[in-house]
Length: 171
Image 1 (tube, rainbow, N blue to C red):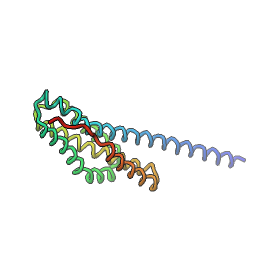
Image 2: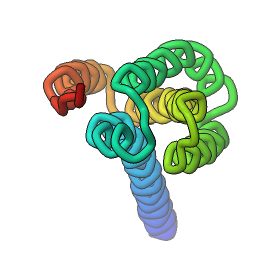
Image 3: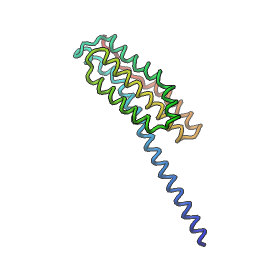
Image 4: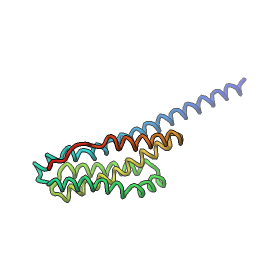
């Protein structure tokens, strides 16, 4: 009888530990997804702020187009190195560093002095966004099984094409 009670207690404790680990993992995943969503919002914000940037700071539409492009170039260049860093060192420390990088880039973007600072801020934000995307992808691969992960990647790809910013640049 005592062995049965110990067995039940052991199973209960393991289920509780497993459940608490799953909840913690989901909370970590939600924070990575929220960070990625924030970086996507920052990506599209330049289109929305193009008219004030042109009127108040004197940027041309070509400067804004270059700033939009440099973001994508930085993110593209950093995806493979970020994937290696996340696989080798884990997710937590690289994501915290990336959050600091995006914060610095956002602060620089808030006060653009000239086109060089605008381009630098967008490049810095693009580097941080690569960390956000790869970390969210890696956490999703940990949480979901392979079949669901493939579906998630397909859904992410389709939605990223569908929900592109349609804001027009001022000429």
